[in-house]
Image (cartoon, rainbow, N blue to C red; front, side):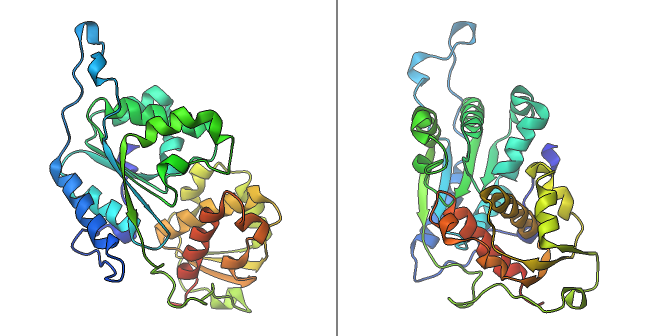
Length: 317
């Protein structure tokens, strides 16, 4: 299972040299250099342990064992994360947040720790905490692996101290969230969304989806049918739904009325984007399927990231 934790195909060749920082936003170049330096520095020694394997009291405080790229969507965070993965000479893994939580679901917490123990670098893309269970799992996982010398590199649209904000009773888990964020050096990266060619660009729609699908392995479904099917499949399985596809056709897309459906769609869009599967759709442009009531809530950044990605995936080739 660890062998499948690698960067998505479009980042197979990603490197720090191939990253093109926007000169209008100096933080892009400085963050690139900081991440490269973090990888080059190598792992720190694992905390010493006392008699009977107990950790010495002096080592009780959290050691900063990771970098956390905080920035908007489309500024190249995943590229830099993949570059860190490729530059790391030791054993490493790369996966989305949901892939790691799915790993815990499949192997159990201790099984996941055993699998990842000895990994020099764990890369976590799209770091999100949407429920208390994920908070506890990721806090424990990072803590356990950090104490054996594993380092972390993560990306998110939300600073680590604000993870979970507006989504669940985050105040009840502040200690756990703070303990996790204390282990990261937060690097803020600014910039514009490179996936949008113009400010007013929207996801392309067509009148006849079937006639507009490219050659290759494609699917054609009603938008509502796809959304309903997503509710019957765990999000960790979405990657299998899109595996090997060249394009997906969706008819009669329309705005969401249910937030649970909207979040499942976001998870599918992330997997489609990772696999670079083209989207051909009719109806409402897929970057406009989130009503204002949803965009003003705690999942706003997730919805905007998905909107950015469907704009890129729906462009005619």
